[in-house]
Structures are given as structure tokens and as C-alpha cells.
Length: 261
Length: 261
Image 1 (spheres, rainbow over the protein chains, first blue to last red):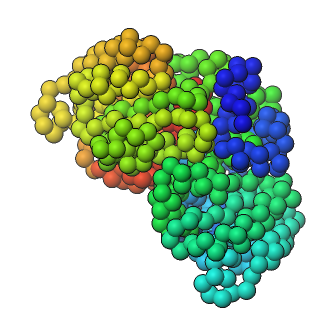
Image 2: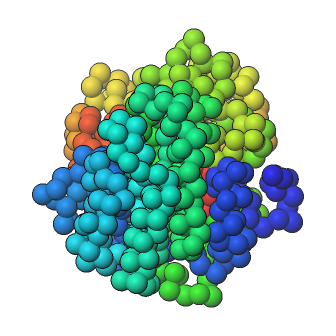
Image 3: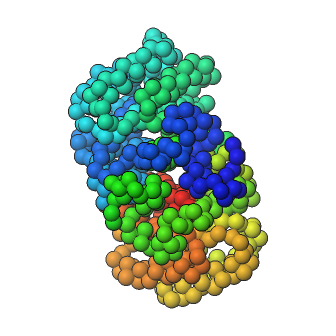
């Protein structure tokens, strides 16, 4: 990828968009949203004043959130201690007067069918303007550690049905599909990786078909693991450390708040 | 501050610049760099391919970094566990092919005179293209807990001399002056605040006079303390938690990498 920092004729916004995430990711993101410049001009950030933002997913999203406080928007206990809380804190500090309401309904251990079973009450009824979903690692994990049946194709089909239902119920919502990820340490064995690639590809196709933002967490953690050991980012290969969660929040905000790369 | 999200005639880049940090900060930043749009077009991010970035300061910057590894660019042990490391990890993950070299030379307990005493060896000789400094909390703290003499005026005068020396030795370096901050908890007593305001104002004037980026950490933590207790961000009121460091890294990158708001 050329570094357009060296070329003053390239608009600064384009330079910044290029810099937002790595080259591999950029290529993927272009597929979804057209040129960086065009998408920014056309769409801008969906995190507009007054919106409701909902994070959904599994333990990575849950991150120890309080069920008792769940109805309190923008409350740290309700948002947990993970990337959702850190992204929320960045957004809320950046926009103190915008009246954004942020909720978290991630639940540890969830797979796509678990989301589907509680989707009306814990997604649709909350009427999010922006809905961010991170799901998939348990869908594959249980096939390795608990003998569960399940394939990448079934994951994608279930996820597709969930998104179809969501778009029918919330036609104006902006969707954010987060790439499921693993790091090569802890519980994650080499045998996971070929099969997991199918789950990641499925999530990306879901994003493409839905016109959703796609947050490339696997690409991000692959890059991060070149500058510090994977254990630094997620000791067990699945659940992010504080540093891993901070990096996820950064990338989530760059992708979504950056206006659609 | 008007929300230009509602006005499609306002360029998206301007909208994003407005969103980068809160309204109070924006006003301050404008003083330094002119209009958001103009500064971005004129300057862009100083974090260009091949640059050397140096973080300097006190314990907040130090954050447990390894002295033995200090010469290793982009090394987590050398960068510590604080905002400098988290900002570095974000930049390095965003720009995997850019060849940026990042160092940390913060030392716990340092005040402005301590920086001055080691400035040639631990700043100038490293020839940073971008130099970020966070200093000031010990300059005031020691006047409360150890009977040290010292005023905001002396802090500013010493800081001014340090920056003058830096600009003479490194005329092409981009300077980043970080606002010293305290949170109202832990070791920080109410009696600190009126005096500390003088130190913060001094750091801001230094940034203005030097044409430096100014990273408004006090404004940021004031906003953060509205969404979670100050102890969440810095248990003793001075040293950031993981969440506090993550928020600092976010704001540092928004201000500096955003291209000069």
C-alpha cells in the first residue's frame, strides 16, 4: 500500500483512513463500503447525537457486566470491564453533550442460537440505532471441548437468519459485525485454525450481505501478536486482557466512528 | 457547540474533528492550531513512515518499563504498561508496514529539573521526530508532601527553557505537550486544585508558544469522572488504572494522529 503521507496531493482524510487499520484489513473493508473517501462523504459516523448503541455477544462482550444494572445506560457496571466498556468510555468522553445511550447485553458462553433465543427481548426491544455483534468463538470451541456438533456453514446460516430478522425488525439500524478471533496461545490449538477460518469468512460474508461495518479483530490481533506475545493480548487465546480490550476498543472506534472505511 | 452531524453541508472531516474531544478542549485546541479543517489539510498527522517517536515524563509515562530493554524500539517491556505502551500498540497495529520506532524514557518521580538534567542523553541524542512530554504532577506534589519549594511560575519557566533547548537541538521535531492532570480521589486533596490550575495553564502556554500539539488529559479525565468514579481511572488520583491509561492512549492518538485539531 502506498504511503500517501508522502504525497501532499492526496487528501488528508484519505491518508488517515488508510492509516486507520492495516493494509490487509483495508482491502476487506473496501469490499464492503467502496472507496474510503466516498464512503466517508456519503455516510459519516453512525454515532450521532441521541442514538442508542447496543453491544451484543458472548463472554468477550459480557466481561463481567452487572445484570442488576443492565438497564442503566452508560453505566460502567452495566457495561462490564471489556472492549464494550472501553469503547463506550471513549465515545462518551469524546461526546459529552451528545446524549448517546450505550448498553451491553453480551452473555458468557453464548453461541448464535443463544442470541437467537433471546433476540426479541435483548436486542429488538431495546431499539438500537447502532447494533454491534461479536459472536462465534463458542460456536467452534464447543465442537472441540464438548463434542458439540456444528460447522462453519451452520454458524453462518444461523447468523444470516439472525441478521435477516434484525433488519426486518430494525430496518434503520446500523449494523456492526465484529470478526471473531483467536490468538495462538492458551486454550487455542493449531487444529482450531483451519476450521476457524471458515467461521471468520462466514462473519465477513454476513457483514458484506448486510452492508454492515466489519471490525477486523483477527487481523488486528495478528498484527498485535507481532509486537508483543499473544498471551499479552489474551492469556487463554480467547478472552482479551486489559491491553487486548483496549486495542479492540481502539479499532472498533476507528472503524465505526471513522465513518466507514 | 453545534452538532454538525445534523448539517450535511459540513464536511465529514470537520465533523469528526469536532467529535474527537469535548467542546472545552476544542476551543483550546483551536487556539493552537487554527481551524480544524485548515490545520488538518496543512499539517496532517506527524506520525509518518519511518519516524522516531519518544515519550518522556514521570511515573505515568514510565509505568514499569524495563531499563535493560530501553534501547529496543517498539518493545512492550521497554514501553511499560501505561498510556505510552497502549498508544504505541495502537499506532503499530494501525501501521504495520510503516517502520515507526517508538521509545519511552519516562522516569518515576521526575519533575522538570530532572528532565533537564538528563535531556541531552535521553531526548536529544535519540533524535525523535515526534516528542511527547507529560510532566508536572510531581512538581506540585512534592510541595505538598515533602515541603519542596516550587511554584507554577517556576514550573513554567523551567519547562519553557527545556522546550527552547529542544527546539534549538531538534528544530524539525514535532512537539506534543500533554496536560498534567489529577483526579479528585486518593492522594489528591482539594487544596491541590487551585495551585494545580496554574501548572496546567503553564503547560498550555508552553504548547501555544511552541506550536505544539496539546493533549487535554485534565479535560478528558474530568469528563471520564462523570461516567465512572475517579477511582476507576486512577485509584490514587495520580497514577492511571488500565482503563485510565487506555483512555489516555485513545485521546493521545485522536489529538496527534488526527492531524492537529
